[in-house]
Length: 217
Ligand code: MD3
Ligand code: FE
Image (tube, rainbow, N blue to C red; front, side, top):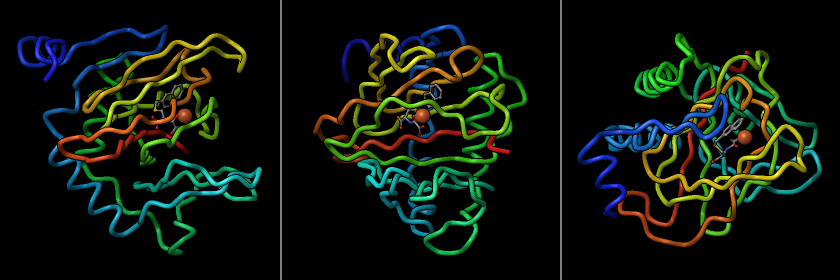
């Protein structure tokens, strides 16, 4: 473990760093729940396996995705949408585990968004080289609701821009257990993830998993 991580977690506990107006990084907020989170992800992905979806433009995403909760985010040639049904199985998505719901609610509360009640959790899996191009999240009905993200496994370089695609981007390294709450003026910011560097994580091997909790409907 690095000196930084040791200082921030072992001696002082999770820390709270503002990234931009409306965006708060809760460093290590999910670390103490890693075993239960990973077990829940195993259960979910046994029912709704990771798959690489096709964008409306016809490209296959490098990130593999699945969902849990009442609604799941999906993309295909016809567009992006939230759907109660997994198009691969024709069944509803696995239920959102209460730990997921509680973690998201607590993180949102710590960032000033009391009462956050997510109805969708998108689960993204990155393998070395996988990336997410700059985009905005705007498929949710109420953009006043925040998004809570949980990073697990290999570290990633997260890109965080402004309200225009051409705005300059800040880079932030997100590591295992980090939670970020995105709301208010940050909610419609362009953002993405740089190609994942290869590595070996003690719990996840050559992978990064990101959970995003949303109020879709
Ligand atoms: C900033 N996922 O699933 S999480 C996504 O690491 C997505 O997998 C990335 O962007 C990932 O849509 C980034 C952090 C994140 C999520 C939503 C945001 C940052 C955001 C919405 C608005 C602004
Ligand atoms: Fe996004």
